[in-house]
Length: 294
Image (cartoon, rainbow, N blue to C red; front, side, top):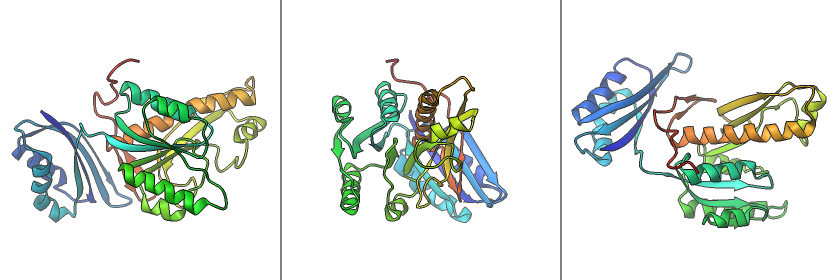
């Protein structure tokens, strides 16, 4: 039986859940997992439903069939086949911990994505990427060629059919135009010391101030640098006995985990933009399972 995910966002009103459930039942579908959230502050309603088509009704028929029931609710909805893997472009500079972590998770099936390209402004990880049979694109970025470099980047994204761009410690600022063009489709990762410790060596700054918690934040990229809607965060404790180098190493671990979890939530259609915030629903049963162990 085919497995599908239905996502819904619309103004809050009564009858939405009943309409969705009734439509699926009438079309021979069985709901296996469901999450919903009604936000009284924004007046919006969000819903994510996993279901199986027990009578073989296809995704095109389901999408078309929901058009009329959705109209009274001004419903923004989408139905996705869970077997379809999202096409992803990863971008990296000289810090490879997030890239290597994502490649491993991809290789064992813990992140069911299709990595269609890796883009870097350095050559450090060309061999690693090519050894995974993934196209590697070296795009040098300078003050003089920045517009041309970004145009090349956009070309790679468009020609590869990528639906998501992941900045896995890519240390270049994207233009406002690109951020707007790919709103909700670019994910970034950085330490969570902002706005306290800006600029170079944030971990050293944190060490000198006796910080006891190291964290990481993954968010959607917007024109406001490092201020996009947050998808995932986490922390790890440190003590006075740790060195600045320990801070950096521990920070890298947190960054890798947080970025992977943010991507996992996005590709499974669990994240909904809600103004400057996000709604992130829990993972469906079995969605963390790997295809193989190593």
